[in-house]
Length: 79
Image (cartoon, rainbow, N blue to C red):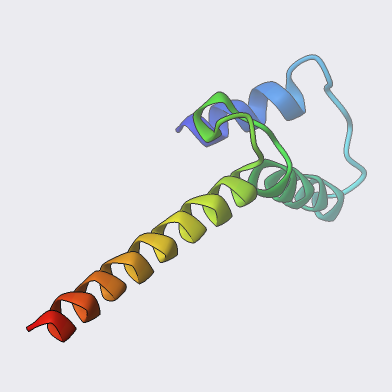
């Protein structure tokens, strides 16, 4: 529900447009979804676009996995 509320607030209210066809409206919605997922900054994503925040989290997670694997190998070598 949050996404659709944001879509209506940011795309429609105050910016009412008459779309020439359903295809034009559908294209505008698709462009908004791309903007929302890839460009729109948000407080909950540390003021980064969601895509960049996901990449940052993924990189951090991968680093933790590598660190854990290194520690397991180090313990095994000590044994």
